[in-house]
Image 1 (spheres, rainbow, N blue to C red):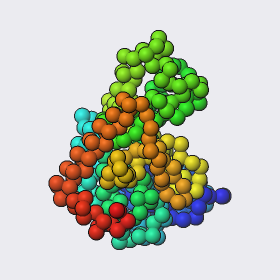
Image 2 (image 1 turned 30 degrees about the horizontal axis):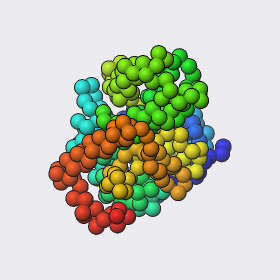
Image 3 (image 1 turned 180 degrees about the horizontal axis):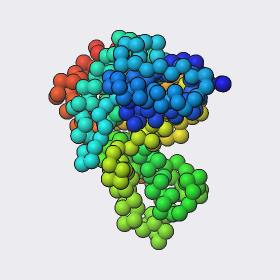
Image 4 (image 1 turned 180 degrees about the vertical axis):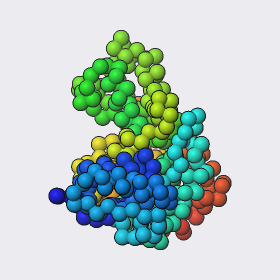
Length: 333
C-alpha cells in the first residue's frame, strides 16, 4: 500500500467526533501508516481505536495513548481538535477562555516534546485565537501553523448550490476571509457561477440584493444551523477539511480553500486570520486579499473583532503583551 509519507501523524482530541473522523479520513486517504491518537479521556480513546481496528485498514500502524509526551514525541505532523466543543446557544467566542488555556498548554507541549514538528493544523474554536496561542508557545515559525477557516467558504458554496440549483462544480472560488466566526467577511467578488462573476448576479432578478444578504447570514450561521439540526457541533466537515490541509503540508494535493495563517504586515498585525493561502511542504503562505470597498470594510471589521479577542486573552494573562511575543517565540517579529 502506497502512502503519502511514512512520517508520524498525531491526532489530538482523537476521542471526540472530529478527532475520530480525522483518524478514519487520514487512513482512507492513505496519508501515512504511522498514526497516533491522543486524548486524555482514555476509555473513549480506546473505543475509537478499537472501532478503527475493526475497519480492517491494511498497512497502518495505529497507536493510541493518553500520555501527551508519548503522543507528540517524534511527530512530524499534528492536527489538534483538542478543545471543548461548541454547544447549542454558544458562539465560538464563548469557548475563548477554556480553549485558550488548552491551546497554551498544547503549544508548550509541542515545544517540549516535538520541536522538530513540520506542520500543525489547529481546529478547535475560536480557531484563529487558539492557533495564534499555539504558535506563540510552540516556538514554531508562522509558516508551520495553520488553522481551519475553510468551512465558511464551503458553506458559501453550499448556499449558492442550493439557491441556484446547480452542482458545486459549476461554482468556482467561493471565499470568506478574516475570522472564523460571526464577523467573517463573505466575499462575492472572487466567486464565479458557470464562469460568470457572482457580482453580475447580485442586485438582479437572478439574485436580488435582499436574497444575497439573507444568503450571507446563512453562511455566517452555518455552524449554528448544524447544531440546531443535529444537537451537536459540526464534525464531519471540519474533520475532512483539516485532513486535506495536513495532506497538503505533507506534499499532497494543493488545499483548495483559504486557511487561517499568522499575519503581520502594514494592514493587519499580530493576528491569525483567514487569507488567500497556499499550503505545501514548505508550510503555509498567504497573499493580500483584494475585494470591493464594502468587502474590504467587512474584512477590516473582522480583523478588529479578532484583535479584541486577542487582547482579551492578553488581559486574562494567558499570553503576554505583543511587545513580548518575540521573547516568547523568536520566530515572531
